[in-house]
Amino acid sequence: MLWTQQQAGWQKASVHLIEGLRRMVVKSQYSSTSTHRISPAEAREKLAGIRSEDTTAVDHLVIGAGVVGLAVGRQLSQRAGTSTLVVEKNERLGMETSSRNSEVIHAGIYYPPDSLRTRLCIEGKNALYEYCTRHNVPHKKVGKWVVAQNDAQAEYLHALEAHCRNLGVPAEIISGSQARRIEPQVHAEKEVLVSPTSGIVDSHSFMAALHGDIVDNGGDLASSSCVIAISADGVGDGTSSGKNRRSAGGYRVLIATSDPDTPFMALRAGVVVNAAGLWADRIAGLLVPDMTHPWHTRYRLRFAKGRYYMYTPHESSIRVERLVYPVPDKEITSLGTHLTIDLGGSMRFGPDLEWVSSNTDYTTSNDPALLETTACSIAQYLPGIGVADLSAAYTGIRPKLQSPGGVFRDFVVQEESADGFPGFVNLVGIESPGLTAALAIGRMVDQLV
Image (cartoon, rainbow, N blue to C red; front, side, top):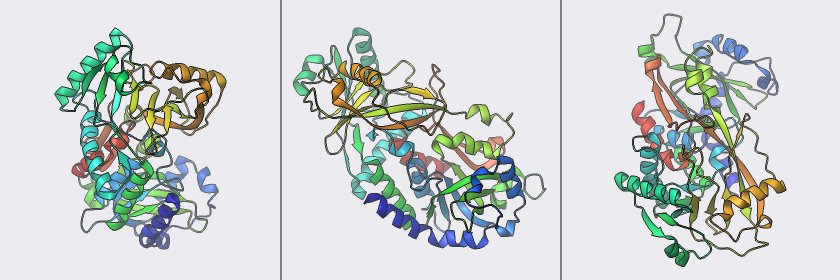
């Protein structure tokens, strides 16, 4: 029902701008199915051949309708007297990372104090709780435990508690015996760090509400619209310098659609925000196709696949009232296979971590060896769990700037004037806690442009 309502609103929201785009679109000999076979070079050539008068102008173009792109679109669409368009290559909003995660509202406790991940998570968490209350988005502040099973992990918890104290984020340490009195089925050999401001949210309802805000603000959202070429308007023809490019028209963008009658749309945008998630490095690369450009190394993404498992009791009868996390790895590559609960109280576990080359491999597996490994990881803090209690649910993929075994990498929220592209904003490596930080990222982008 939710998706039906979203699609209806989506179509209604997009009608007046998209009809304008279609009236001005450049006709092509390619069919809608063949647009996907156009090479990047062909797409650039096609865009270069489009006259300025055959493009449609928009003030703000946001590429990607995941939760971050929607939050950015919501923020920019509040600007009076401007136009905002969010484009999404998929049929529906939020079909990738935004809907394939733990749906956790993070407290902002893990990352370096001067990092964007920390600042935007804390700001975003507070904004998200307020937003959900005001817009009736289902959510609950259930709290989270991080459990220590040995002395080294307990030492980590005490350092983490001091870190929280310095950040002003509520947290406390309780003993393993205290924890057993509260959650008898959770095992903490040593101690537990309690994070009371962590919670859960219905991510689909949150995205639907953000989409509704964009519509109410007069913005538009177009699905099945894939950006295939971007050029900085005026570069190389003497009509615009990098310094004043935004006022001169900004960027020209070619979009492939699923409509056989109008397979391409050509836009001219003053501000472009790259919020393409798993595809953000490729979108950035469209603007700088020269592979020697530093963006191709600076913004290169790696993909971390994570599987989730539902608790389907066969060997046990377990009920837990809060989120339970193991101690993360040293470089915070992953927060570990943790226990989350949904708004109905059902439990699920995940994600695990597998580095993959594909950003589209969402296959799940009930392979016995994989289930055994997962059950063993969970049993460290939930010893009653058995292999038969787990069934594959879904898979998510995280867009990581951090390489396997590499050091921590922060979010990239970068307005690119320094590289000669004013008004172009790259959002790259927005993985966890991106859902929590989305509203704060939207505000930051608004300040940058």
